[in-house]
Length: 335
Image (tube, rainbow, N blue to C red; front, top):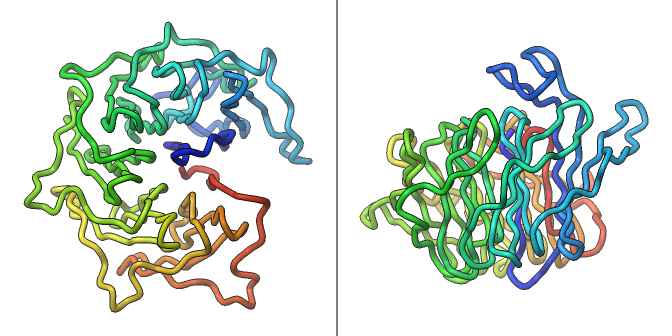
């Protein structure tokens, strides 16, 4: 379960992350073995208090129970949080101190334990994502317009910067996601209205920008701020906060290149006002978009063959009412 939560440029919000039944094929975190589900855990990055709150969820009542020692210390102005696919490690991008904090997760209690000292990032890191294979973490630095890459120690969770330093992105990168096969990284650039794509070296984690001849960076709508990748890896969706819609792309599984779906099928697909976050249901059948300006959630069916989104009928309640200025959205097991 690769979780990524990010900060919209200019808007600081608390970050909430839900973990549900994480297990690892290699045995997973302490006390978790394949076939044994860990309890659902919620983490909240508290931007104003420089901490991360952790909770377990009562499976019967849904009530949150604070983990022992919560909240846990983070860096300055934590802006985003991500968790390894086996649920063993958590990582927090600290936008004020320009670094990344790493933690081990107690699978039973949800307690976070620092995995060494925080490691340096670029300026104002605003998004973090972990490759599905659990080997690498990537941070989008909105202030320095680049991406930092790290290897993850599979035993301790400690991060080590990939040799060569950060690689260039577009203007104001604010969201990032890794393909299901851990081969490609996609970074959403709010300021330059596009998506930067990179190949990931399977051994080192080094990033190489896809050649410009592939279309890289790939055009999006105005002020894109959110990204989601279909579970089958065939499609990418980007929420455009300035044009109130969602751009859809097919993915070349071999090269990582994106091709915008034809406009004649509705692409980009209309959303509410100022869409901020986007997620895909674990069964890959539905897409949900949080609309910060209209205070609601737009819902769509996803055609797994074509990638086309079709808005649910209004009679179902679509769009669904939310609170004020919703900015992040996630489903269990999905970013």
